[in-house]
Length: 122
Image (cartoon, rainbow, N blue to C red; front, top):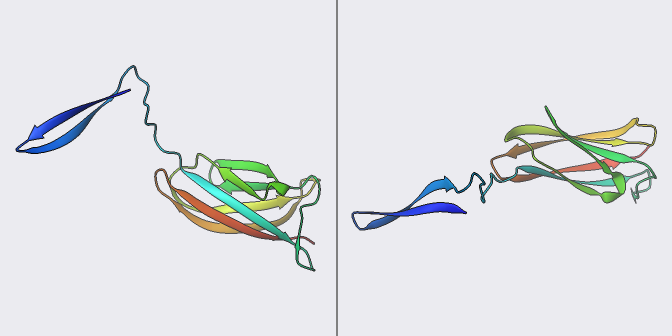
């Protein structure tokens, strides 16, 4: 619960937020995140993920997650605000980088930006 006071000043009303009650903020800071999606292609065209492949989504310096390739999407959160080159890497079952893509994202407080990779299998 949050205490909000109503202040009347010269006929105008203005809400004044005086903070949380009991030290618990019911309106926490919005989470900033990167929504990553990817597709896979081979020499013929679109294809499915091989078994045990994973995708790493990384926003330097320290926002990082690993996701099953066949999910085809992932949400990396929380990510600090700022401008990033999001890195999406496809790893095979032996943890070798098969392909990597870079995507520029700009994040403000509570925002979400997308990153897309079109991975090419050997």
